[in-house]
Amino acid sequence: MIDLSTNPFNLNDEQIQKVTKICNDMTLDEKIGQIFCPIGNVQDEKEIDEFIQKYKPGAMMYRPLPSKEIKRIHHRLQSQSKIPLLLAANLESGGNGICLDGTYFARQMSVALLIKKNLLMI
Image (cartoon, rainbow, N blue to C red; front, side, top):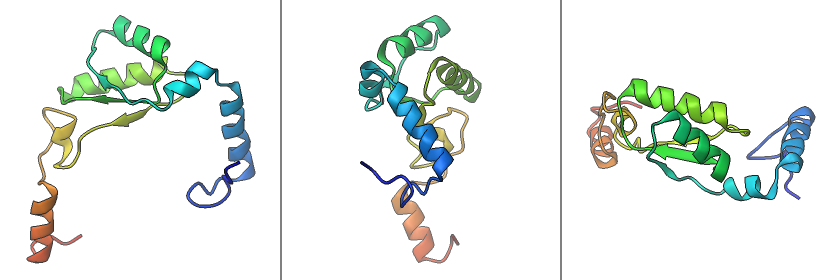
């Protein structure tokens, strides 16, 4: 059994009881679904609902779309999932990894170079 009261979880007794209840109440299909993070390619609300109900994923990742569309999709995904989803994105170079209108920052090597030259303080 995992000790949820220690690192990296550090949960209190009430939180541990809640997590334990969620796990105990999950069906086998829900437990299996938690290990998957499919790339979302549907935007239609009915298709999103059907996908979540059928596969019960633990996470979803969408490629860049307009921010309003991403917000709508993420809200729909969360509203249809029994267990809150992890929402993944390629954010290595900024907000443009999830939103077409997101801000590009820099790739990792560019950031490292800026830090090395003391042009960027973190």
